[in-house]
Image (cartoon, rainbow, N blue to C red; front, side):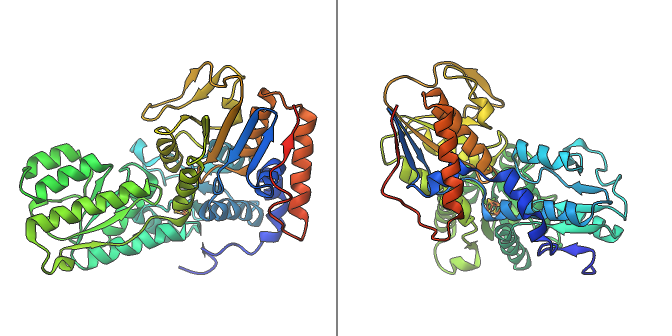
Length: 427
Ligand code: SF4
């Protein structure tokens, strides 16, 4: 594929789009927190922001390339193969810029039918299925590939498994774009297979099969099609290699690896285990950092947590899952979900959609923790914090002043991160 038709390292106009990106995604209030110990005391309200939250390096890069792409090809039709990231505000913004979304693969239609050779197609951070990539490449369209490096390293692992005759067991969600793309890398190799397990319960079925406690037909029925064509447990679970969707709960991925390894040991012993079982750490460091930051925040007294991110964002849901055993926690998509100091729209863990609930923001002294998934821009985090402060009685002009101060601190060349301890706003 020629260099003019395939871009993987930017389009060379980063400086031109930088002011627009700053205007769309920057938050002075978030900068204030970053430079003030991630904490604000306002009267009887304490807000604690997780030390790692929001846009990860992969998402940052994908969004930047989308803006570069629009600037570089103003007269061409520009498509994205799916949501560039799982954040409705970001996706709406791209639509406003004239970027079109291809229909989801699940519609069953040929979703590439409307793409012409003159068009530009953006591949999101999750990547895309190899078969579609090849069709677009053969058609001669310009491809701007923002597939994250951490996703590429998962692909390398599963390809290595495929080459060496190991079946890839992927901890992930079968219909998630990233997992679909990962599985497609296995299909590049004849007679290679994959299997997707969503959670520990599904991994346990695979273990039961390996140890001879579950029949092959029963396993296939339970896994409900989450495997490659022609997958036969009795032939294809003799040699397995573990991988995962990068945004899964890292502790669960590690536990699944252990469950399967232990099952292999019980079934066939430890001798020469490496020839039957492989695993590589394919957990993305940004996901890990956000999960670690929440874990550390929850070591302190937090009365309620707000977890901000798209309702269909996998990594945001996992952050919520981590919070719930410790405190009240609400998964909100954006600041508008905080309807008032009484009502909140949030998505409970495991529900299919959001619900509206009352009495979320209790009175009296309150320590509120905030985090955000990897596809949430700072401006949504800042808007959410501003709304909480406002509901808790901080005057608008004080919030605006904090925001101005944050922007000014950001601009300072010193880069100091703490200025005399956490700030205090008097009620
Ligand atoms: S969550 Fe991780 S793998 Fe996904 S885009 Fe961000 S850095 Fe890349």
